[in-house]
Amino acid sequence: MKNSLFKKASLLLLCLISFSAVSQIDINGKVVDFTTFAGIESASVYVQNSTIGTITNADGNFALTVPEKFVNDTLVISSIGFKSYKSVVKDFDASMDLFLEEDVASLDEIVIVAETRPKTGNDIVLRAIEELPETLPDSAYIQKGFLRHKERNSTEYKWLIESAITLYDDSYEAGAKKNLRINVDETRKSYDLRDVDSLYAYTAYLKNRTRNKKLQKNNLRRDTISTSSLVKAIRWNDERVNGLDKLFRGKINLIRNANETGAIFGNGLLERQQFKLDTVLVENDKKLYKIEILKGKDFVGLNTPDIYNEGFEAKGWLYIDWDTWAIKKVEYQLIAASDNQKKRSKSLFGTLLNHKLVLTYMEYNGRMYPKYIYYETPKLVNAGDRSSDQTDKEGNPTQDKTEFYYNTVQEIVFTEIITDPELIKEERSKQWSEDIFSPQPYHPEFWEDYNVLLESKEEEKLIRDLTLRAGLFREQ
Image (cartoon, rainbow, N blue to C red; front, side, top):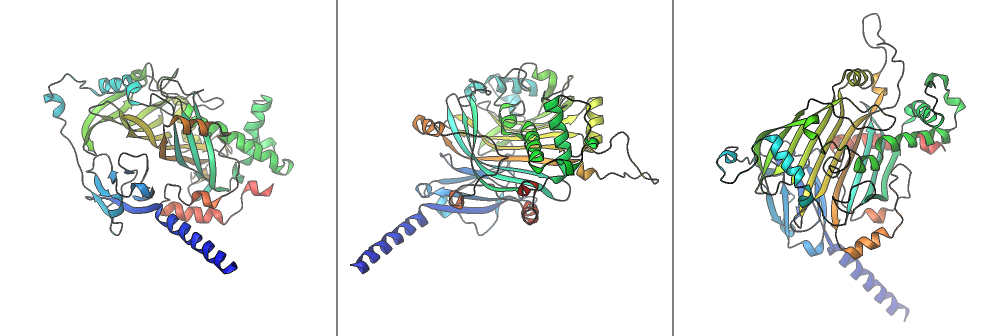
């Protein structure tokens, strides 16, 4: 009897393993420019007519887990300015690099087209902003995604977080501040090595709590401050500079929040930046306007509480669908331009580039949903003595500027869209928290079939180095 039960249990276990083995298919590969042989970054990799997808990393590599029910569907790999590649999912061959060829339309089509269309960059962008209620989601939805938050100086990583997140949005028309929510579902990695920013963060923290603007970092000593107090200060600084609410509900979410008061792409956008039509490109057989973003006569500002985030000029590119006026991609930079901002940026960061943003969108059921977000900004961590430029007798700087600030990057790739009202209701009934900074338990089974953004070769090395060292939060 026992042997019979054992055989039945073994057979059931074998069936479960077999089902698991075929319940999904793992696809990986490398996407390469046919002309330059360089990997293509941020190319879209997705299953056609589904919400399953990812993007390539800085080296052009990708990995995608596809549920078994999609194995007979079409896998699409596309990038703006290149001819798309298509293959049945189960027939995809990852043994060789995938080369994409250039694909550019003719700008002359703008002149000879029969219908009356905007013909200048400014008019095209104004039309695209006007059409946002028709091109962005008009009903509630949820997206699942993968977040990588990293901070480093010029030589090493100081901090790394990787998390699975859920985004809820009521719709574009509903506004962002009360109708857009984020939850951190699980954390895969959380390594912290930011001891250097302790006193600076603590000084700013005390100034904020006591409103004592004359408080100086030089008056504080590390041995008089508890580690738990430093941790509170650092987390406070994290949230005000790089919290997910700033990324999603703030001005830097250019397209989604264009209808908010004071939005960068809201009323008066042509005062803050100008737009110049460059050419017409092709992606996945669709024509796209490529439009250059140039400075306007007024400065751009982010109005960040307690941080001087004003006095910038805009640079970058917009990619807009020829037929629907949907915004497909944004590459946006804010460069220090006012005298005060240029002085501050050079002194603290050694660069005038303060904010770099990339937004890409995917079409699903006729609407454009966020696909990928890349946000980069320098974060001040150790002010040092900036009363004058410190140099030695030969005129060389005596202070190491690599320890003044961290280069902070947040990347998010969305891999699933949920529009079913019942599933949305179920997700919203759970307890939500957008705190990415507090360590969470690690559950390896959660990540077995979760789509993530691959690390580049450089990132892999820096992450390995980071994991070998202890961080401030481990001292508590």
